[in-house]
Image 1: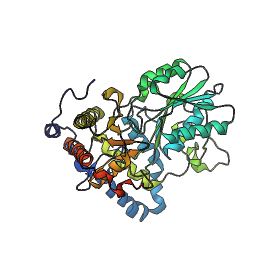
Image 2 (image 1 turned 120 degrees about the vertical axis):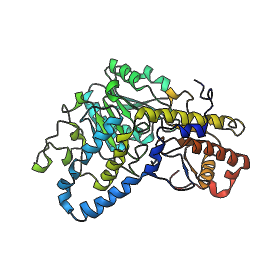
Image 3 (image 1 turned 90 degrees about the vertical axis):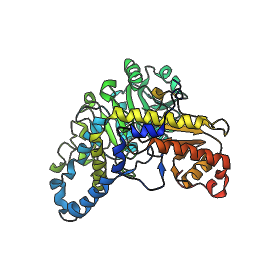
Image 4 (image 1 turned 180 degrees about the vertical axis):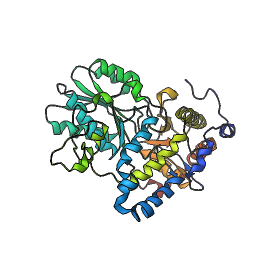
Length: 415
């Protein structure tokens, strides 16, 4: 499908946008076009008030009583249920807890335990590095010949699924180029060969509809600070299919995963539900911010979000197509909306400096080594006019070589 077939009029698209009212529910700096919601979501206005209330009233006045009176103790489950609606998960299958890396450690360890006679973990070389690092660490920790095997391209994955594969571990939408896997088809192919499947939804949750139940996924993980707008370092989440709950243990047997944590037993008795995947005491302030951010999604239709995402990406590609070849920009993201997430990425020389020049002009995207400039489309607070203007500013920077100033070549600690 050629995304340039139907030219999009930004003014008309904004006028007809069914999501336009959501923009007013976010705090957005003046003079900034924010195209990095796939890395850190914008601040929902209500989160500021909610966290302030938690600090001043629940912590400041109620003190420890708020574990019960404000129901702090059930924040992981409450936030998890809100996320479950967005990812097509059954009730009591999702909890918000820990970080994405820690949650992957838990579910990967559990999945390997469920397939004890198999030794291989299959993923792809382009997967997000922390997922690969965790898989390497788990394989070494088990120490029974387990190993991580990487596909060089998405098309290589099916051919690698043999009888020695225990787990297929993939990120649904690639963080660098935005390529989107067919979750249902890959899960089905893996299951036909007795392979369990773990999906990382970091670049999916909050950007498009997902149907974990329909795909019969075994496990899923994801973070709360990208499209879900939970704040920097927000709690992550994990999903466990009901058929895998209660029959085994995840390795981090902390007290909040105990069947009755306040019995203070000396022996660990794991919860039989998804609560087993909790570990230590939840970070209340971060959880409260996440809970309030997720409340905003109660009013959102994910099909509408996806439709706007597709249109914004198409518009951006259309605009850049007019000058991409001249300036050496190569589209890294699939043109076909069915094969991409909610981002547009380009490979180019001097990508880091170009992105720094863009940021200096108020267009915030990000850079991914070695040569990717990346632009995330967050439909709840981004307008079509902003997308078009960002493409125009990029063209100006390339034409004038503004990016070739010394300060734009200095690498920050976070790129």
